[in-house]
Image (cartoon, rainbow, N blue to C red; front, side, top):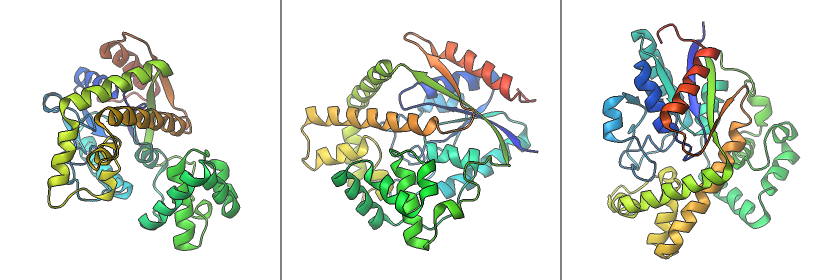
Length: 315
């Protein structure tokens, strides 16, 4: 029988963390992160990692899993996720999955395609093409070699388009023919996904406030400290939102005033891509948030939605 899974998601700065904490406290649940950057130790400010106080109130999982010089793949996440969920289920402990990394969420909801390892040189080459020829160029490339995959992917979904092209280069086979579980439900889980949505103008204001707060709390010093470690940062960690821009700043690319605006712009673009991903999920349930909504109010609405669509016997 599939294991019921409650998933709370939404774009960056939508308030998922506070809402999830409120829900978890109210039902004595634990939280499993679905954020690809929270796995890194020492990357705290730029990822808005739940504070020590938050983690003392509610047990969190899949946070601080590896050092920032290590790589961490979606394949490893799936294995860690299965281990944690099985353990909590055996203990009869309710839990909520919280995060905005769409690739992780897709792996939970639809299962994982076990493909070839990343080819970073080829990925850089493809990103250079997109930068030079425009955002639609990679989608057109994919349509020429795998029309079925291109039809299923939005032209702005660069992560999955690049992966599809990478699979063809590495294996000589189309990802649409290999990815037999594409678009199907993962039989291991019965997932209900609730997503927080803000008016775009409100979300952008929240993003600006969030970036200002991160810089005031010492994001630049955090990045400087991470780079000073003899092991440095992994390729994946160094590309994290906010960290990449600060690294460029430290290398002289931006002034202090410019780096703040660049991070805000990158974050707005990232939030837009996230929304594109989320809207591709089956049966996602949107909760509209308004100015002045307290986490407790949103958590009540979201918890009611979870219980309506997939009641858990131990909640």
